Length: 227
Image (cartoon, rainbow, N blue to C red; front, side):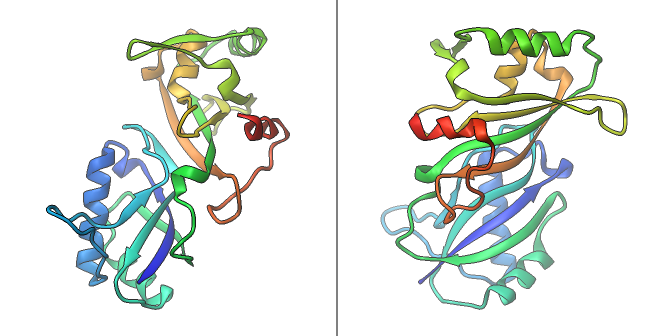
């Protein structure tokens, strides 16, 4: 058996493809490429694929991470070439890396996510809103009937230069552990802005060790270790 870690992008053409549909897309892609996935045992077989974090509907991403298991070892170059020939528009493979079969699950080592938020309508006092938000001792939101405090889940909220079209941009780094996680649209709503007037792009997933990919770099993310 072989376990592979795939770093891939999900662009505009696939932004409205949901999490379950993404799994099905990958399964079809492997089948068309002639790369045989390993399947679970039991009454109903499922392909052994594990995506680190579900990307919300309508979001794009530069570096999603997925583990897949194959019954028969193949060269990563052969797999990469075969998959690239069958990938649908809106999907791009950045890298494929073999990893140990016994390596920890992606979900167990995922600790944070970095996002770029693009505001389609101008917000005159955006800098003031960000400052006020970060000065709050708590940011309580209602998530499906449960009250959540977003403040300890925010590791960085920073204004970026406007994009080439003049749209304001915001960098967000949030907690993404299994127990404590925040979404950028929740942060935008906490700023008093309608999330439907913004675009969200996940540019990086952050893992607790190098086995999962990028590790800690931002000083403010050191507090993730204490969650």
